Image (tube, rainbow, N blue to C red; front, side, top):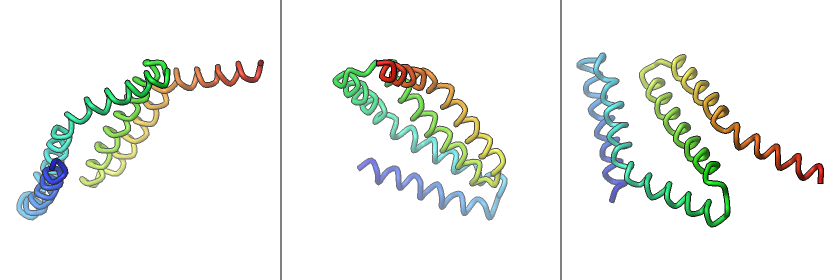
Length: 129
């Protein structure tokens, strides 16, 4: 089972990080980063199936492909920002983590503008009859 491998990577990374923190604190931050990227690489094959399924759902619901791509980008940005901010928080850099989160929110807003614009256009059409 994939989840057992992911949990094993996480627990092993946490254990090694605790051990190294006592001996070489300056290297202890590298272990969570390596563990995080290892987990990400191990779940990457699932991403292809998820994206394909979302695209086929959008197609069957007659949703513009461009809008589904935007939603997938937003989800990706959210995950990347969350992981990056958590790694910064783990290393005690809360100020950097909050700036990463702010940057992510602004990028999500910028990426979602075409969807917001289309939604407002639909509302205008409905209001004007």
